[in-house]
Image (cartoon, rainbow, N blue to C red; front, side, top):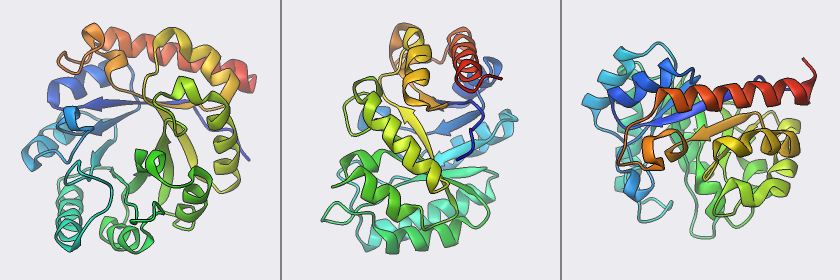
Length: 241
C-alpha cells in the first residue's frame, strides 16, 4: 500500500463557492445542488459556469433524487444522460452511488454509468454508509478500476465518530487501490488528530469551511486555507516527509 498525497475536496453549489474554494487551496470541487436533501445533480448551466471558472478538477454529483439510493429504469436513464452531459461540459469526474434493495452495491447500474463516464474520474459517494456492509461494498466496487475512491463517514453520523472504522477501511481500500475519503462533520481543529489516527489524507469539507458553518452561507476561502494547512501538516507528520 502506497501513501497518498493529501487532498482537500470542497463542496460547491455555485461559481462563487468554487472560486472561493480554489482561492483557499482546495484540490477539487464536488459540485452539487440541494444540500438540504444531501446533495443532488446540479443544473447543466451551473456545471458549465463552474467548470469554466476554476482550474482545479470539478466532480459532478450524479444523484437524481433523495428518496433512496435505489434507482428505477427512469432514474437510470436520467443518470446516464446527466453523466454524458457533465462529460461534454468539461467535468473532470462524477460522484455516484447506487444500492440494491438488499443494501448491496448495484453493480449493474454502476457498470452502465461507468461506461458512459468513459475517461472521467469516479468517486463512489456516501451511499456506502447506508449499505448493508461497508467492507463488502468497498470490495465489490473495487472491481471497477474507474472508481478511484469512496467518500464515507465510516457508517456513522460523522467521520469523527468513526475514526477506528475509517482506519480499517482505509487499510482495506489501500490493498484494493481504492482511496478512502472521509467526510461529514469534520472540523478544522480535529483534522490533525483525525489524520494521524486514521491514516486518511483525503478529506471532504462542506459546512466546515463555510461562514457560520452553514450551507446557507458561502464558502470562506480563509477557512479552506486553514483546512488545507492542517491537512498538509498532518500528512507530513504521518508520512515523515
